[in-house]
Amino acid sequence: MKNSEILELTTEELSARLSEEKSTLTKLKFAHAVSAIENPTRITKVRKDIARLTTELTKRKAASASEQN
Image (cartoon, one colour):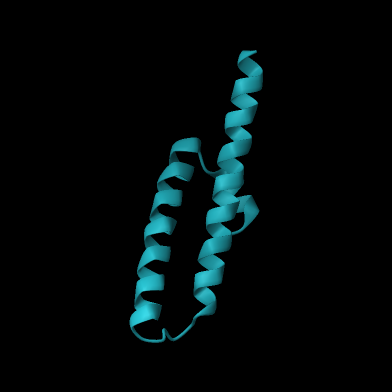
């Protein structure tokens, strides 16, 4: 997921996507622990997507907090 795609999402969509990615990461980690998955670099990509989504959510919360003050 690219940053331009993340910027187009609403805050609610970001939250939903974040929870979806976290569940995907959990499933990937479990599958990799049981037996080696075909593409282990996918775990890294999902982790980076989670970080991007979390960063954007934090930015939006900070922006809304600064607007209220």
